[in-house]
Amino acid sequence: MDQASIGVIGGSGLYRMPELKDAREVRLETPFGAPSDAFHLGRLRDVSVAFLARHGEGHRLLPSEINFRANIYAFKTLGVERILSVSAVGSLRQEIAPLDVVVPDQFIDRTRGRISTFFGDGIVAHIAFADPVCPVLAKALSGAARETGATVHEGGTYLCMEGPAFSTKAESHLYRSWGASVIGMTNLQEAKLAREAEICYATLAMATDYDCWHDEEEPVSVEVVVARLNQNSATAQKAVAGAVAALPAQRTCACATALKNAILTAPEKISAAARRRLEPLLGRYLPS
Image 1 (cartoon, rainbow, N blue to C red):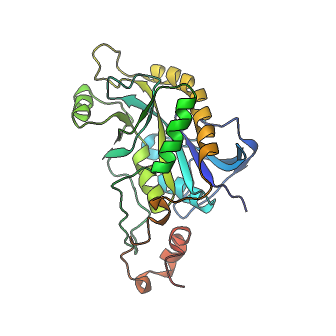
Image 2: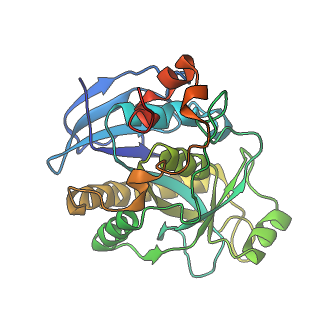
Image 3: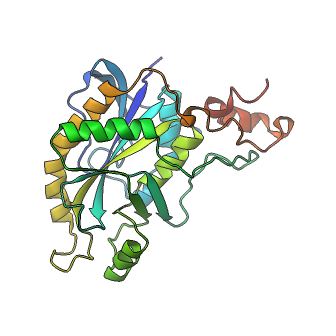
C-alpha cells in the first residue's frame, strides 16, 4: 500500500516538486469525494513524501471549490503525520515585504459556508484550536526558509478570506486594525481539518504583494502575483526540503493526540456507517 510520512500542499504556482525522487502518481477516493488532484509520492531528502497541488495541476479550482475534507482525509489514509502547506499571501504589514516568507501561528476565519470539520452526521467532537499551528513543524519550516537566504517572519496571523476577488481597501484596512499579518484564501480549513485528523500542520506563506491597503503600491493583480510566485517557487521548494530533513522522526507535540478528549458522542450511539467513514481518524479511540 502507498504510504508517506510527510505531506506537502502546493499552492498557487507550486504544482509539482521536481526534487521528489522515484515519484509516482496515486489517485484516491474518499468518503468525502475526490481530492484536488493525484498525489505525487516519492522521497525527499530520504523521507517519504506525498505532494498535492491544492488547486489541481493547471490551477483549475477556486479556493471555495477545493474539497478540503477529501484532501486531508486522503493524506491521513496515506499515513501522513505532518503537512507542510505552501501558500501565496498578501501582506498586511509594512515590515512584511513582497517576496518575504511568513510562518504564521494564528488564523482568523472570514470564509462563508465552507465545511471545516469531518464531524457531524452522528458524531460530535470539539478539538482544541487555541494554537492552530504545530510549533515543532513551524520551527523547522522557519529555520529551513531562513537557510535559503529569504527574509523570514516567525509567527503572525493569517486571515483567511472567501475570495475569489481580492479585498476592498476598506476590508484591507479593517484586517490591519485587527492585527492580521497576511491574507490568503485557503489555509484555515486545512489547519482545522488537519488538527481533527491529528496531523501536524504549518504554513509557509509567501508574500506576493501588499494587498490593497498600501497607498504607495499598486493594488494586487493576478499579473503581479504570478510573477512573484515564480520568484518564490525555488525558495519554497528549498525550504520544504530543508524542513523535511530537519524534522525529528518521532512526534512529541499535542497534535498527535488532538482527538483524545474531543469526542462527545457515546460510542454506542455512533452508527456503523459513521464508524466506517471516520475509521482512519477515530479507530483507535472507539471500542470495537
